[in-house]
Each structure stands twice: as structure tokens, then as C-alpha cells.
Length: 498
Image 1: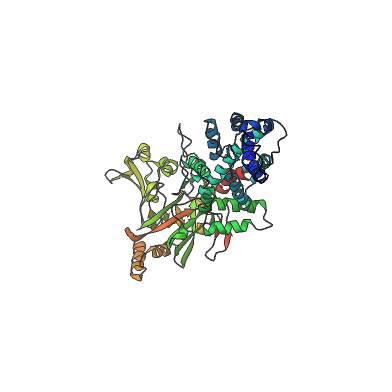
Image 2 (image 1 turned 90 degrees about the vertical axis):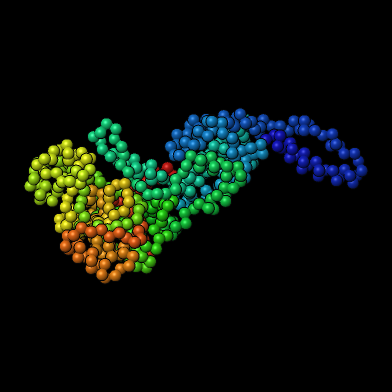
């Protein structure tokens, strides 16, 4: 820094004196001045030593115990001797001011600037620019803190605005163990929505944006632009909100930041299931069909996913999941009356042949080589029609033989599938051409207990989502209960920024 001041004096003050010397036609007294003549101006208090700056950065990295992805990278980057990004021979780069201007928006999205160390950054910048140091080494301390804190704040903000402050794959898919009875249990997949996610190159590329003086350009391209995000952000600015209301807004704003590969708002025709609302909404342009749904119980939650409905099966058979066989069926092995009353039979998967119940053992029921199947038709747990779509969970939308539960307020009752209140109306809605002949054929097939499949000419996008604040068809925001407790989990993670 003392070298910088010497050069500044030499290139600014000396030329100002030259015209005076020329007018008086006297010899230039500064002709033989060299940089060494300014050594007396060197003040230890303002001396910048890279080794001292890096020592401060190393101490900050050791003391930093924050656990966000940006924090881990920041520590690792400087521990490995990464290049200084914000601080150089000429002081602090102008990009620091650009970042501070961008961080002014944190309060508008419900976050605390202290979580991004903004007050400390502002104070250190003031000290550096006003040379307000009271002791030797304070200059290096300020520059070291600025380098570390600017990187930490920038990477936290860049990651959050680009991909969301919460990674739902990491958070939601590590909530519940799939089977606690095995030696090495795995976690249940609760979130399987295709979306853009950070890769290993993201943080290094962000630092290149700083070095290229392009961070303002980057941040202009990444803020969420969805209508829902805008509605929620506008509500957050209202006065009189209590903490619970603010928390719900922040959590649903975060969901709106996630960059899904498909967005229902971009589809002309789609089906949306919002778990907390216990409702299904089918949209085709301006036409909207709504109905109640039942979803997975707490122990068998319906996974959040994106797919496309491709087929409808009338009077389907139900292949009972092994989890249900293990808990409810295997104890009735050898009881032909039980199997008959539930219309169950056992089928060999390889040949498709039925096995007499008297020959069935408990080991066969639990074996992947055999399936317990319920006959289609009246009394079948899937009801009269099922709507099939690709997914890895064997969950579907379907009718139900137990329709009384639609009158309940809380309808988290299934083993993971979504039960629909108006299956016949939904079937007609999904058809490309809704002529009465096809509708009558579907109804007759349902009543006659004939098994038949209808392949949709055009697949219909399906979104199984989780929003506790969501607009109704009139655009009015409605609030729903946190059925699975996801709001609480996401809110706890967002507390890192509040």
C-alpha cells in the first residue's frame, strides 16, 4: 500500500508542479527524483504484506464452523492457497461495491445481512478507504477479513439465487430411513423432481465472474421470474405479518426458487396434485377441473415428482407391494378364506401362473419371484380405474373402493398412491378428443368389470407438489397445513440466513 501512495504522489503531484516551473523558466527541481526518495513516506501502519493478509485469512478459515456448501468451499479454497480474489496491490477491487449493492436485496427476501457478514464488510471497507487504522498490522487484518468475508457472502448469495438456498434432494431425501430392520438401512426418496442443481464447477466459475468484473451481469440473469415467486415476495413486504406467516412465506418462496425442468405454468394442459391442499387440479387452457384427493400416510408419504400420465387401466388388478405383504398378508398364509374374501391370489412372476393358496408358504409371499395380486372390479383397492405414469415408486393416481374418506378434512391415508375423488371425470378430461362415445365406452367397461386399457394419444404432464401457500384458479392465495412437516424442515435450514 505504501508503494501505491508513493506512485500516486509521483504521477499526480509532480506533473502539477511542472507548468509552474516552465513559466518561471527555472530548472525542474524534480528531474532526478526517484521512488527511493519517497521511502520516508512509508508508514508501517499502512503497510500491506501478503503473508500477513493470508495469515488472517487462514485464521478465519480455522474459526469458521458454518456448514453450508459455500462455507465448505470457501474454507477449502483458501486452505489450498487459492488466489486472492477481492484484494490486490491497488487495494480492494470495485467488485466489492457491486456485491454490497446486490446484497441490499437480502432484507426484501427475508434474510439477515449479518448472516452474510455485511456489517463487518462495510466497516472494513470504510477503514481501508479512509486509512482509519489505529495500530500496526490493522491494515492487513482488514484486508484479510474483507477477502474471506466477501468470498463467503458472494458464494452464499450466488448459490442461493441461482439454485435455491436449500437443496431438496439433500434435505428431503435424508429425512426418513427406508427400513430400520436391516443392518445398513437407506433413506426413503421423498423428492424426485428433475431440476437444475449445482455441479462441482459452480463455485470456481463464480470466482472467475468476480475476476472478470462481471458479477452484476451474472446476477441480472438469475433471479426467479415465476409468477408465484413474485406473488409471495410481494406478500412478504406487507406490514403486520407475524413470525409464523413470515416463515410460511419464506419456505414457499424457497420452493419457487428451485429450477424445475418442467413448470406447470408453462404447460397448456397438465394435472397438478398439491399434497397439503388435498386437492387435484387439472388444467386445459381456461378449463379447470378440481377434486379432492387422498395421499400417502405419514409412514408411507407420497413422493414429490414430475411425470406424464400415459395410460388409463379400467378395472385394474392390484399387485400388492411387498411392504404391505410383509405387514398385513404374510400372517394369513394358508388361510384360504382370508385370500378369498379379499379376492387375493398368488402369481408366479416368471410364468404368470396362479399358485393354489394351499401350496403357498410365507417364504413365497416374501420372495420377489411371486406376487400377491387382488382381482380387478368391485372391492379392488385401486377402484375402477387407475392412471399410470412412469415413476420409480410404483405410485399412481387411482379410484378407490373406500370413498367415505373424501369427507374427512385430513386425508393422508394411503400407502403412497394418490386417490382421486372423480376418476371418471378425470378420465374424460385426459382424452385428446372428448367425444361422448369414448366416455360411454369407459363407463360401460367400468360397470361390466371388464379389464381394458386406454393409451392417451398425447401424454399429459403431471406434477405432484408440496406448497402450503398456493393460488386458487381465481389467483387468490390460499394457505394449507404442513401435512408432512416439510415446512418445518426447510424453515430450520433457512434459519442459517435469517
